[in-house]
Length: 358
Image 1: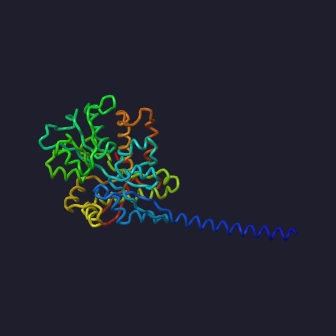
Image 2 (image 1 turned 45 degrees about the horizontal axis):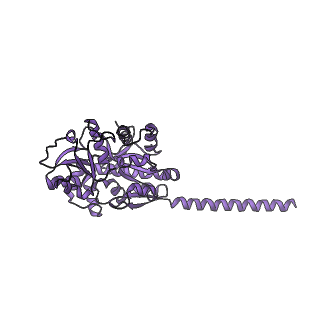
Image 3 (image 1 turned 180 degrees about the vertical axis):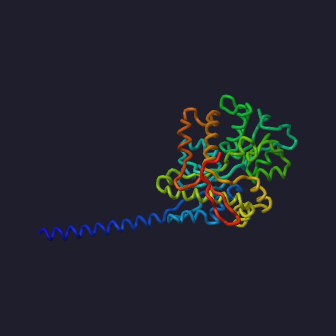
């Protein structure tokens, strides 16, 4: 009887081990099939880091190290917004104008930013015959923008506060009006608005086509020239379920950004050849040369911190929000991700930037 029990016990143990081994194999197979869904847009010069990381294989390379792969989800103007796609679980990670999502994060949008990617792509114009010379002249003016929660609004409100023009609910001294991006230049030229805020290449194309006068450029303005407009994010679901994947896509996008900084013409050519952005190669490459694509997590967080605190004072973020907690939860440091990268064109190698940038 004891012998029989021993045999039965041994059989159960073997079966258990076999079952465990099968489960491990299944788990490993499932792990190897993990997919990170990354957003992209077309027609957007500033989307170059995503386009480069995609088409040059940086996303694939980083994710393959952990047995995962990338899928790409397009955000189309006039369709679901990036925020809506994140909220509905269609996007796991990506890149965009961080200030556009500040209020959405406060209201529960489940993302955290992981690195600053690109500085300076938003410009503000008046007609060539306008008496307006600077932001200080905008009291009582009508301003055309791509969307009322767009970063062009958030940045300008911060600048208006600096010059003493009211932007709060109790003291609002300007009017923002939303237009499709492609209609902004026409609205300004026709006099429907006094000022427009636009992102490149639409901004510069409008300037050249209509002779607009630039009154603010976030790439050169003292307040914004060291602040990132576009930043990398990951969803909280991705952080919980696949933190290695979150780190991998952040490294890939940092590398792609460093590549664009070092090789602006090659990046512009890649966009055109893959039908991701239309336009003239010389024009697009020249715009890239004006912009700063050196990635930095530390400076990205500093940007987020500055904006969040000032926009809370403006009433954009709620007074009841614990701003310290909001910033710490909304901007994180991932294990295995450097502060940034640089790219050496001669050796075709990346070098990690470690230590924070000021």
